[in-house]
Image 1 (tube, helix red, strand yellow):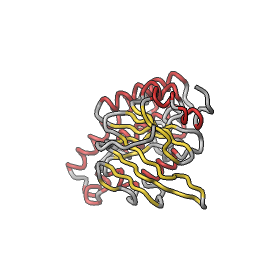
Image 2 (cartoon, rainbow, N blue to C red):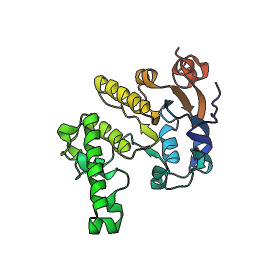
Image 3 (cartoon, one colour):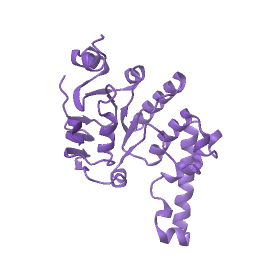
Image 4 (cartoon, rainbow, N blue to C red):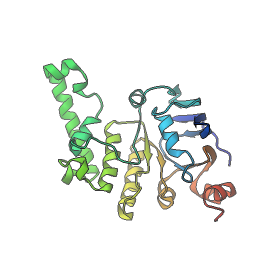
Length: 260
C-alpha cells in the first residue's frame, strides 16, 4: 500500500524533507488527514514521527515540501500562527510552567485571552470580565471531563505522570482546535487510564474534531484509529486501516521485524 493523499484532507503533507548534518530525518513524507476521524502515525523508533510533528507544527523548518491546513500553506509559519489557524499539538513529555496550577494552565491556553490586549487588561472592561469568566467555566468543565478537579489547584510538578498526560490533552482542548496533534498521549500510563484516554479521544472526534496521533500502544491504535499511516526511515511506508497495515509485508519487515 503506497501512501496517498485525499483531496478532502484537513491536513495535507507532501514531499516533506528535513536533514540534520546530512542525515535525512524526513525523506519525502506524504499523507493526508481526513477530517472527523483519528489518524494514527506509527513506526519504529527513529522513523521520524516526532520530527514530523515538529515540522508540521512549526517548531523546525523543513528544507522542502508542503504542509497545507484547510488548503492553506502553513510551512514556515510560527507555532502561534499555526495554532491560530486551528491546529494544536501536545508533547510526548508534558510541558508546563512549574509554579502554575492545573487551573492556571488550562486558563492560559484558552482562546481570545483578555490579557492579550493591553487595553482590556489595564482597564478591566466588561467584555474582558465576561471573557475571563467564560474561560474559567471552560477550564473547570475541561478539568471535570478529564477527572482533574481534585488536583485543579495543584502545581504541575505535583501531578502524576498520567495526570500530566491528561493535562496535555486538556491544554489542547482549551485552544478549541479543528485538528489536534497528540504525541504519545497514553505513553507510560497504566492500562486502565490508557483505555480511558482512548475513550476520551473517540468522544472528542465524535464532537467534530480531528486527531492525528503518534502512539506505540498497538492495542490502543487498533481500538480507536480510523486510519493508520506507517513511517520508516523518514519515509511514508504504507497507509490504510489497522487490519490492512497489519497484513502488509513491508510493514511487517520494517516495523514488526517480519512477524505476522
